[in-house]
Image (cartoon, rainbow, N blue to C red; front, top):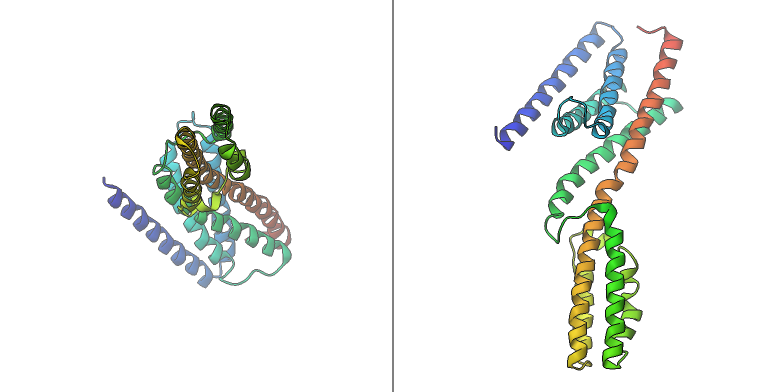
Length: 272
C-alpha cells in the first residue's frame, strides 16, 4: 500500500469514527441518557491510551505493535479526543475552577501535540539537509572539541607568523561563537545569515593578511563551518525534544485533574 493510500485510509477511518461519535452522542442527548457521562468516559479512556504511547516508547521489548503503528494511533486518537472534549463541554466555555483547570490542561496538551506533529514532520526533513546527523547528547562534546581546535589553530598562527591579527579577531568575534550552541533562531528559520556574516568578516580580513596567515584563516573558516553545522543539528534536535517537556506534563495533568473531576462527579451525582 502506498503512503498516500494509507494516509487516505486512515483519514477516512477517523472521519467515520468521528461521525459515529456525533450520532451516538446526539442519540444519548435526545434519549436523556446524560451524554456527558458517555463523552467523559470515552475522553478519559482515550487520554489513558494516548498516555500509553509514552510508556510504549520506553518499553520497546513488549510485542504490542511497532512504534510506527503506535504513533499513527496516537495522532488520530488525539484528533478524535479533541472532538470528544468539545462534545463533553457542550461546545461551551467550562464553568467552575476545576473544570476550567482541566480544560486548560487538555487544550495545552492538544495544542502542544499539534505543534509537535508539525515540528516532527518539518524538522525531521531539515535534519538531513546539512551535515551529518548526530546523536543529540554528543553535540556539546563535539562543540568543545571544535573550540579547542580553533584555539590551537589561532595559537599556532600567532606562533608561526608573529602576527596577532587572527588572534585578535578570534577573541573579539569568534570566542563567544565557540562557547556553545549559537544562532538557534536562525537555524530554525533555515537561515544561514549568521554563517554568511562570519565568512564575510574573514574574507574582509584576508586583505590584511600575508600568504601564510591566509592559510590559517582558510582552516579557521572550515572549523567555523563545521561548528555552524553542529549548531544547526543542535537547534533542530533540541526543538524536537523540547516540545515534549510541555506536552507530556500537560498530558499527565489531564489524567490527574480528570481523575479528580471524575471522582467528584460520581460523588455528587451518583453516576448515571
